[in-house]
Image (cartoon, rainbow, N blue to C red; front, side, top):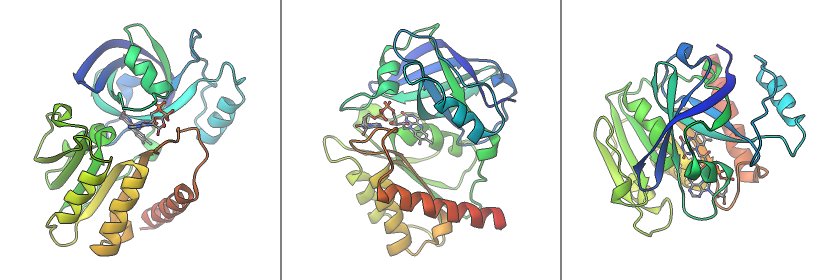
Length: 271
Ligand SMILES: Cc1cc2nc3c(=O)[nH]c(=O)nc-3n(C[C@H](O)[C@H](O)[C@H](O)COP(=O)(O)OP(=O)(O)OC[C@H]3O[C@@H](n4cnc5c(N)ncnc54)[C@H](O)[C@@H]3O)c2cc1C
């Protein structure tokens, strides 16, 4: 299956006050392989224009170069999302309508309507990672990580799950037991960090972390530095950054994280 194509909205519904679930159909989705944590890039056209996609290319770098070659006023904005569910030739994507200034993806989701068309790159099986085989998998994240955690929970029954959301209305039914943490006005990340710091963990767990980048960094430091988990046992992704868009240049901390992920991935490929 080509990892790129158009997506057309077939349904839109609010699953919580701050999460919009958009169902898309599109060429190639029916032959999509199944694996947990399927990430994709969504391409949002400039207001009032049709989405213009680079020509399909199996090589992601060539595809990206072709994307950058699209004139700026026609080039779609690209943002990362996760498949929440699949059914035949449709996929669901959950968009968090976050507080603060809405970026292009969030603004689009708030107004999404049946018939709207976006572009996609992915999900691409080349980025598939096997789930840890440790006895316990600690999953921790904020609301943007719920789609990925839901897909992981459908595959494993040994997960210890901590999810931080704005308040009780943002909880979603998920398989297994989830410890929900409510910000209720507290600083983003602080309830989740406190809960993980205070948790009794079994011997030798692996961890999967995603959400706001600073929060993920602090969680990882705690697990590796204070709990003694091997770096290679902690899979982590900063999904978004405070006060920065996905287009803004990486900070030195982002670059350090990326270097560590490259090392982990090289170790994983060599193992
Ligand atoms: C692999 C991956 C998978 C992801 N999966 C999902 C998913 O399934 N659902 C989902 O909703 N998000 C998901 N995200 C996060 C999403 O890509 C970001 O939140 C993205 O920045 C949203 O784009 P935007 O255009 O709305 O905002 P941007 O233009 O990127 O940013 C605009 C402003 O909004 C702020 N901001 C961005 N996101 C948030 C947030 N969640 N809460 C508070 N402030 C925010 C930024 O700090 C910035 O100030 C994923 C990210 C990655 C890397």
